[in-house]
Length: 122
Image 1 (tube, one colour):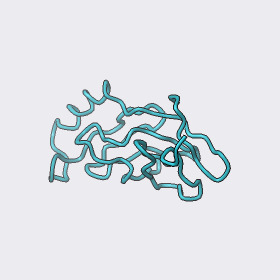
Image 2 (tube, helix red, strand yellow):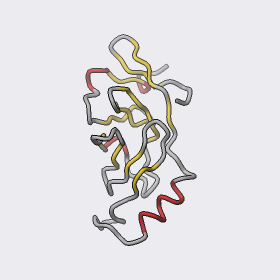
Image 3 (cartoon, rainbow, N blue to C red):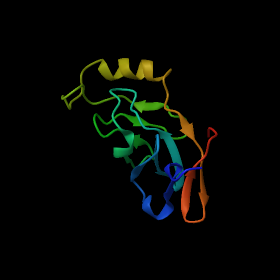
Image 4 (cartoon, rainbow, N blue to C red):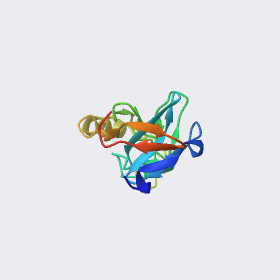
């Protein structure tokens, strides 16, 4: 296992998300999670996102939210390209294809002072 698969546990504070190799790692409801890093909307880096009060991962570009346990998109985007506002019907379209294109998920284990992204799915 390489150092790219791990992060110091004390670096992962509530609400924060970090890049750990190909994974976006954070905590939701006190539990660590790892999901694939690319938003299903326009491929934003989800490791630059945040975790909201409901425990969902929030995309940094257009605010789509994801259930970190399943990888499912919960709410669709609030914008497209450079626009940052709701576009009637657009979020529904993105949600429809995102139902089939969920984020990949992985288990995260605490080992000593580190959180380690496991090879198996949650």
